[in-house]
Image 1 (cartoon, rainbow, N blue to C red):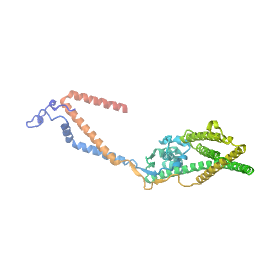
Image 2: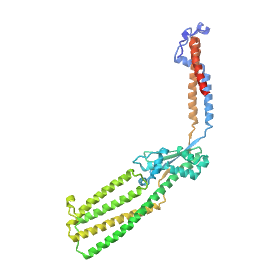
Image 3: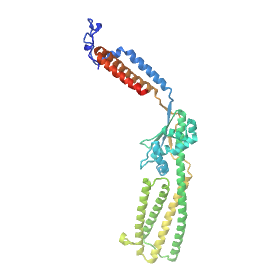
Image 4: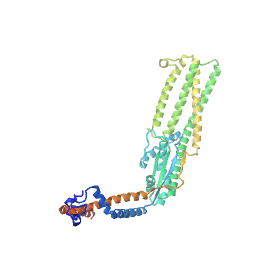
Length: 418
């Protein structure tokens, strides 16, 4: 704070008659600050302007960086069943991605786009290590650091890449998206092939069982033409067959997912729980069919004559085999279609085709910020200098003490630099 001018030695100008300041000096406060700044106005605009021009010129030494963005529509719901190998998912933390336990298809797509597998393939295919003059791993890390992904509330995935070449940024981001699509298709095809091979073997076994059970039922009916089952027993047999079919379908899905998802994934746990519940229902249903009245309160096969029991058992075997064969045939055809499918696994809403958008350096903001900061610093230096000059006249001893502190600080800085 500037000391009151009344303590300063009055100069001839201040003591002259008619001088409004007089011996009491000018008023203290904001008006005094404005007076000092107005007097030193040349310094306040010359130095900040010079510093601003220098900083802006220096900013031209830094290369421009451009960002290209691709927008991808939310993948279909069955995209989530594809997933990616669990090893790749665990490595996504290095790319800044973390998947929740209940990940949506958009979350999984975002993880695939930023996965190490996709980056490695693109760096190798485009020769980015040679283009940038880096080692392969360094080039992969640069792609990771210069790319980002965001999942909007609508499910649309925005994926972008930053590069110093505005048109190459388009090439790079489009290449990463295309590589992610190829990875998805490869995993889907591999899963479909595994499913087809598994279902195919089960289909052959079920077909043989169906032939044997159908032949045994026909032979039995030809020998005992008058055997007829009650409607309740026929319904129980049909329901048991449906449950067997559902159990087989869940087991096929579980076998396919166990090759791509973690054992702790919620879909794996969900399928295992449903399989246990279905097995329990089948046991209860078989108890009903076999006539365990103590548990079910119903009359099943055990309540029929011996010929009726044989007829119900043979009919049950045929129904189960027919249901399984129909189900397996449908899944086999779906797996074959998926294995030969050559369509994109997701739809790109907007590709990068017009060159990247410049994002830095933002020279206009740099210039404005530098001008403001330089002006504030210049004003502070002017006010400090004015305070010291007034202090020298008002209190020379205190002025010398302040200068001694300043010299001590400067000497310490010079010693540290030395």
